[in-house]
Each structure stands twice: as structure tokens, then as C-alpha cells.
Length: 212
Image (cartoon, rainbow, N blue to C red; front, side, top):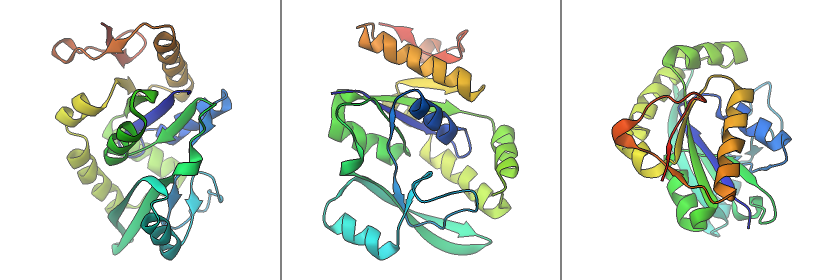
């Protein structure tokens, strides 16, 4: 069965853009279900399947998700609860898959699929993430500050060390996709990589890892 590329990282770090470019290079993009409101620039299936809370909870009760979670969020300073989850039917066994997940989802995918998973953490500065939110037109200051606090809790270095295979600096989507496919090729050829956390450094191609 084909590998599953998992992209995790800070909010607005470029994960979805990278995932869609990987899809254009022949991978199957795993689309999550969500109950959050659809934004003006989004469509059904891009980047989520937008469903009602009742539909989501019914699927969860039937055990149809590989992983699912909920977020307590603020939208225009109004508290809301948004649900996200990946349906079991979304993963293709005969294709390279790519999916964007939070750390809870990463753990559950790894538990479900084991060595099929290769996990990449997409890293970007706070300034760059704030700029991207403004450019794409969905910047809400209270929501962005909440995301920053959530990122600090969700992505401490000890968790990244435990769950992630590679860290990639978000230097440009095309370049990052090239790096990811290079790593996938190395793994397929039998050359294994893992992190050296004592000697982590920014390598020439902007991913941090070393051969074992």
C-alpha cells in the first residue's frame, strides 16, 4: 500500500497550499469533514467537506472517522465549537495520499496506519503567518491570537520530536513540495532518515534530518 504524507504545523504556515500542490503531482488529497462555516473563497470539497453538526456527530457515533476532534474558537469574539474529522473512505490504498492534520490527528493516523505515514512539520514565523491571513482575507485578530496560543500548546518541541519525522521551513510552496518528494523517494529507495535532535540544523534544502 502507498504512503500517506501527513502535513502538520502552525496555523497559516502554508500546509494546505503545499498539500494541494502535492495533489497536482499525482497524490490523492484526503479531505476532512468540518462543521465550521465555509469561507467566501471556499467550495464544497475545497478544502473541506462542510457538513452540519448533526451529520458530523452521527458519523462519529457510527465510528466512521479515522480521527476527529473539536475546537472551541472565537469568531468576531463570539464563542463557537467547530468539529473536524477524516472519514475512513477518504484514504486510497493504491495511491500516494496527502492529508493536513493537527497533532491529535497525527497520533491517530499513525496508530491506524503505522509505517505508511510520513509526518512533516511545516514551520513558519508568526509574522509570515499573520501576513498570509491578511492576504487571503480571513484575518480576525481575536481568532488569530487564539490560534497562536493554541499552537504553543499543541506544538511544543518535545511533542514535535516524538511525533514528527521531518521539519520543513515554509520558504515557498514549490520548493517545499520538491523537498517532500525527494524525501519520499529516499524512503521508497530504502534510505531511512530520522531527526538528530542534539544536532538539528537548517540544511541546504531547508529540511532538518539525517540518515541513519
